[in-house]
Every structure is written in structure tokens, then in C-alpha cells.
Image (cartoon, rainbow, N blue to C red; front, side, top):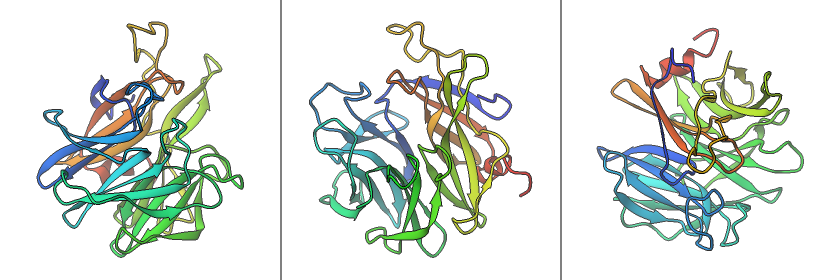
Length: 294
């Protein structure tokens, strides 16, 4: 991690899955994906998500059994949660995105299927609003592209979604673990990037950033926004020889001119933990640091 940018770096183990921090009606929450595959729960139980209060850690909701890659988005006084239907077979493989929503985080609508992808499976998703429409980014293993190339959907109501033909990102390189934001006329994507460690010659993973005004033409950031802490051991009690080589699946949230990033550490091979870090400034200030011009 770049300690000139990031402060108060904290590693912790909660449910060890992809995380969405979000604010809802004046309180701060986190959605954690939970699965037996990464050791977050006993084998045999269905994948799902839990929503907890950030301040107390109190669990508020358990949602979307038999779904994974679940993501929370708040709009118009409602929390919408989208996840890939994977069944109870512990594979993280599915081709259909479902949605449930709530106005109080305690009473949730019956999940409905909002998108089915015929060309491959779907994984993580993320949403941004550009003032006119909602854009959903999703990962796919469509055989026409490298895994996990990003495709895009659009909606005006967060319920009915249409696949966009032209915008495709990551069709010429490895990408994954996306986050999507719309700030000051730009869509910003952060994504997992793989690279060869020059010392160990092993594959490592950091988080990079790109931006676009039209989702078609992209400007790449000048350097990674997050990178591994090579001195950190994610699970020293059981795996003392394993050190972090990964900083992935980042999600950012701004409050009171401070940005908190949630991300996954570990080794990308099942030994992992959660982490947070803070940036003093706005999310736009942070993202603009990684481009040659504002």
C-alpha cells in the first residue's frame, strides 16, 4: 500500500468475501458475501450475503441464499441488492442475476431475476448513475473474450435492464473485481490487475483505475491505486509462511471528505482477509490523482 496516500490500514477477518460499504438513512453498513468456498462458513450451507452495521458489527439482514457476487446499491430511499444465482452446489457459477430490495434493511422483497446472459456465466457486478440512467457493469466468462471481461447494462428504474452492445472493457487484458462510479462527467472503473513480481517471478494482483466519458473510449490511470502489502501475513496462525500478494475487489465510500476503501488481501488462492484504508479527501480528488490531467 502507498502510505503517502492511504492511512489507517487495517486488516481483519469478518466473512472474508467481497464487500460493499454503503450508507442508508443516516447509518453506515457493510454487505459481506459469505461462502464455504473461501472458508467464511461451514461446508454445505448456501452462499448468501449478510448486512451488518459498520460501527457495532451487528448483523441486520441475511439475504439471497444460493447467490454470490452480491452487491448493494442505494437509491430513492431503497437498498437494492443484486447477486448471481449459483444454487447450493458451491461452484460460484451462474448465468442469471437476481435482485431483492428493501426500504428498511429488515423486510426484503422476493428475489426476482433481472438479467440472464446467454453467452456465458456472470460474476461480480457494480452500478453507477450518470444523472439520466443507471449503468450496471458485470463480469463474464463469455468465450469471445478473456475472463473476466466487463459488459454493461442500462436501466432507468433499477429493475428492468438492457444489455448494451458496444461498451466492453477488458477484452484485451485480464480484469476482475470491478467497482464503478460516476463523478464530474466521467465513469471511473477500478479493477484487479495481474502482474509478474520482478523479485519472485510469481503472479501478483493489484487494483488499477480507468475512466471514460462514454464507456467506450477509456483512459488508463498512471499507476495502481492499491497494491499488496508484502509484509502482511493474512493468516499467520494457520499459514505462517503465506504473505500477501493481492489487493483486490476494492469498493470505495466517501463521508465527511474522507474516503474509506474496503478490499480483499491474501494470496488469491484461498488464504485471505479483509482490509480497509483511509484517504483524507474526496473520492473525486482521490481518483484524479491517478490521471495526468483533471
